[in-house]
Image (cartoon, rainbow, N blue to C red; front, side, top):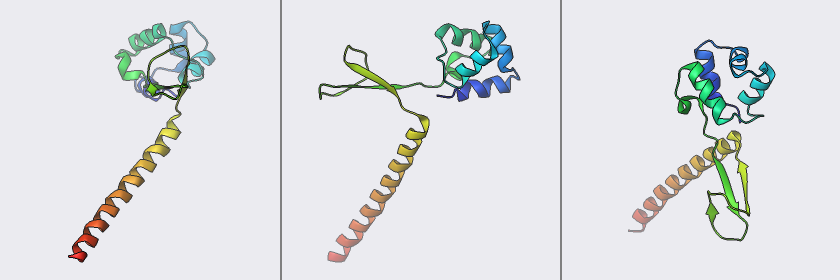
Length: 123
């Protein structure tokens, strides 16, 4: 998952990927992989980056929410356990789902209006 908040904050401070990489004592390529989401940024790295950018960690760290499901046909869980698998949901998928929900909400609204009209016509 691309680190949009981090990228925006870095660019706003006019700090290059190379500058942050040097500060973290890694190569620019390694830093680029972190910023693009190919490699996880550790908690220590988040702390160092926030210090360099002079911002709170929460202001630069994107929400990497994970979902988990228990495979014993029980309920949805958000904690770890021996038989739980975690999956990151890509942003594009969440956007598609959000648009679909908006479409359904609009359809429901239209159907409710239609029901009201039909009930009124029956009287």
